[in-house]
Length: 272
Image (cartoon, rainbow, N blue to C red; front, side, top):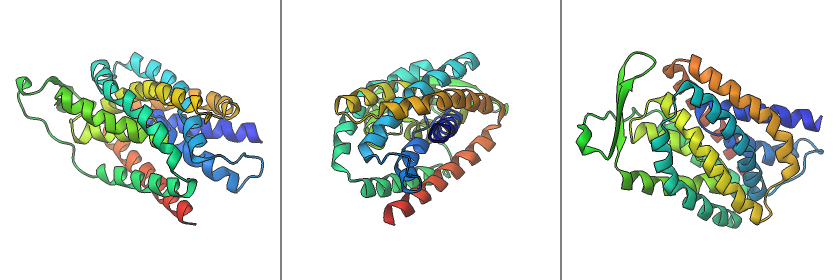
């Protein structure tokens, strides 16, 4: 029963994580913290252990997703590595700050954080009309609906924002995608499918950095990681497959619903 449960959790986390570029931490962290309240066989974890275990699982989710999205040619590799310059040091800092948060407070903070991200998805993405020379990095193309897109950013801005993203993602054990996808769409004008695919590259590397820091502190439950990995791997492949076939407008609706539902659940559980 225990193994089957974690296979299911891993699959759902991998599927949603890959589909929306979230990495899966928004599913794994709440599951690890809430399941012990209803099932006696599930070990009780601290918020730090839940975050560390989640990040370790997302390494596998990231590998599976990056391979799948790489075949679809939807990852903006250059943007991804620019963002990683800031995400890596931010992730290390977030790991150490996480030790200061008690579990109940962690759930409430995480919930309000997810709600803020969900509400941001109702704003229209910034439409970039500047000339290419006005941006340090710039790309144009045609999205899956046949509409032209243009996105870009200056390197200092991208790196500075990435430090904050890395810090928050490691603090909450969500791998970076949950924050970076809305940032890429709203601030830099990324189409949702390029944003989600590129975010999985960020998830992979930030999860590696964050896992290393949590492991040094002894906050990774490796047996639980092993139980989550098979489902997460195949779930990630399924999510990437769905991402390719769903229209961008449908993807956005799914993302909003998932974020809002998770936020409300976490806030209520933290208050109770």
